[in-house]
Image 1 (tube, rainbow over the protein chains, first blue to last red):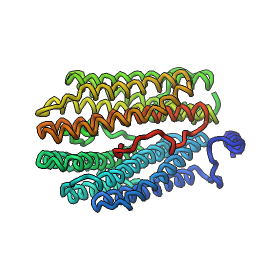
Image 2: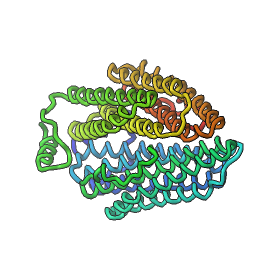
Image 3: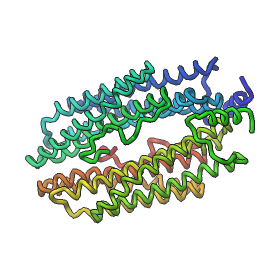
Length: 251
Length: 251
């Protein structure tokens, strides 16, 4: 333990805002693996929240929806823990080059996962709102298709992260457009339902946000792909080249 | 300059991913002031983007909207610069307690501002989409009201940050509900327009997202208020106590 580490330990013992981990990690490589392991676990929890949210909305399962809302706090806790640990590593070890990129990228991937969790929670809340809507269009199939596509993106990018696989991350990054196109066609379909039957308007308005939230989860998968590529290669993906269908002013 | 700083400087000169600032800051207090100054400048740029986006949408000003879209890259650059500088400070100086909270909070406030910028850009894109819609309801006044309320929140929280004013930050934090209530009433009003006249449906669908994006900017102002309170007091605001109207499953 060097002086800095000693000083920081002392500060923690004096009741600072961080929780010091019980064990002292032997090498920076071990510490990084530990941090990345936390991101992988958080990723799996996030993916479950997202796939459950798609199930809840397509099956109108209000009980499942409520469970998703309750479980979101776990992801908030994971993000806070990963951020604390990353900042602790930066302060204690002054990582450089690829080590630094891996540390910062773990923190930023956790932030993207936390936002996916928020979006899953929001989908769950929409499930409850939709259960009260007077009439709903037959949108289960297209919503499920978009939900599956987005879940696969998230699964693929988490696999790429766990395997340090640049090519797999690039594949996710290039597939962003497919999600956007499916979202845009859903958007138009929902407007058509609204125009055909005014009783559908409330349900369709919620479904517009369901589709948008799924698209945003896809955007986070793309962000995570960019972070993995940067972490492993030191190269930024060109922002202007990001394959993005912009037809319906998404966001 | 200590050994760590020397090592990191050498690494930068060897062509690492960070840009080292030209000057060497004398004290940690100076370095923190410099970082906070960057956040204040970024905050003013963000506020201008948001108020311009509200102007563009209420006046159907497509030229202004295009300028907003182009200027968004400046905010992305600000965020990246503040993040790099914060991480550099954490690695070089190992700040603790309040110093660490201030450093991390600058980085997280910049991330919130960057997202406000994205939302302003999205509002600008919706301005263009709305200009092409077949018919629009007379929603200029309520959208402007929500836009002004949200801009004021952002202005107030940026003032609180610049003045290190906990009470002002708490005031912004408590006012979150007002934005949510105005959003919810706008949401209902838009559904009513859609039900009354099917030609309005496309425009109203875009306006639902305009209202939601403004509400989300308000949420970021609340997040920033929480970060300021944490930075200055070390206390988290209780999440369960966050004053949030949840009637319409926002997000």
